[in-house]
Amino acid sequence: MSNFESCKQCGAKLKQDDIAIYKKMVLRTADEFLCIDCLAKYFGVSREAIEAKIRYFRESGTCALFR
Image (cartoon, rainbow, N blue to C red; front, side, top):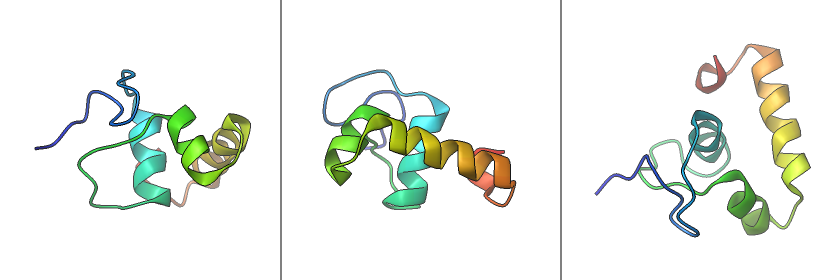
């Protein structure tokens, strides 16, 4: 069952960026997602690193997930 509302790890309310970066970095066809904080833990990086990737994809204008 699809869950576009809350993080599958901690239950935090998801925003569009949470869903987009998860799809970009983990699985494009996902129907369950991690929030940015849980995704950072999953990859063993800081939240700032994930946010930097979001900024990069948004500013590059090449990824449809961040338009």
